[in-house]
Amino acid sequence: MFIDTFIGKVKLALASSTCVSCQQKRPDHLQFCGRCHEKLGLRQPKAILSSPSCAIHAATNFNPNIKRILYGHKFYNRVEHIPVLSGLLTQYWESLPPSSGFKVVHPENVLVIPIPPHHGELSRIELFASQMARHFGYDYRPDLLSWMREIKPQHRIHDKQTRLQNISQSLYLKSGVISGYEKVIVVDDITTTGATFMEAARAFRSEAASPEETGNKLVCLAVTRVPLGAQIRAAEIE
Image (tube, rainbow, N blue to C red; front, side):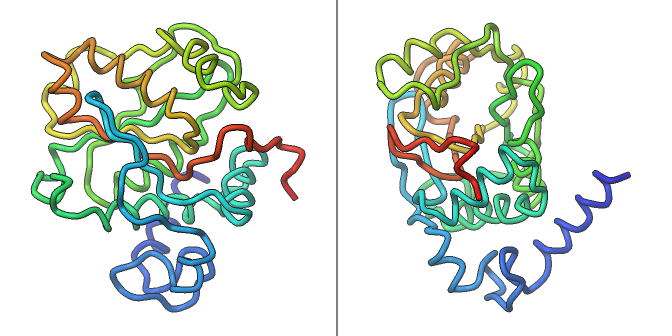
């Protein structure tokens, strides 16, 4: 009952003409008013990292306001932040140019998959990734990616190569599903070195006919990019 009521409120916020962050009036084609757009550090629609396997995007530049919203949701279950996180992904995605290829793909041919929670943890990403998918009419499957083994928390590792080694060969993609889609979006809350997304891309390559197919189909999207060494502890959230 709570989840249904909450989802209804999120849909209402996204469909209204008010900013999903401050509830002030906003332009019809945006999720945020101009003040919150600047305050939240929304980025220009350009990949922060590209490889033959995938393009990695971050909706915002890391800043104190994103820290408060994202880590408040991540560590303290502040559900009131979910519409803001969903709105950040939605507005960034809507700003992508036609050359991205998504504007000409029918929504039913686009799949959204969140990075899964670790064993025993609740999925914080699923709550806002699912709202983004609903907004665009994309298919949403939170069950396709799973962890094959437990890893050390990435935010405690401050060396890029060690992070890559820590997460290597850890994600598994359920077979026989993604072939029916033209585009696949993998969503996470934070990216730092891109290690988690690159591991997701490796799992996708095992199901793709070729590396080129993975690169043409897969896009990774995080709420924000946190610089290496600037990971925040839960205790720092006010």
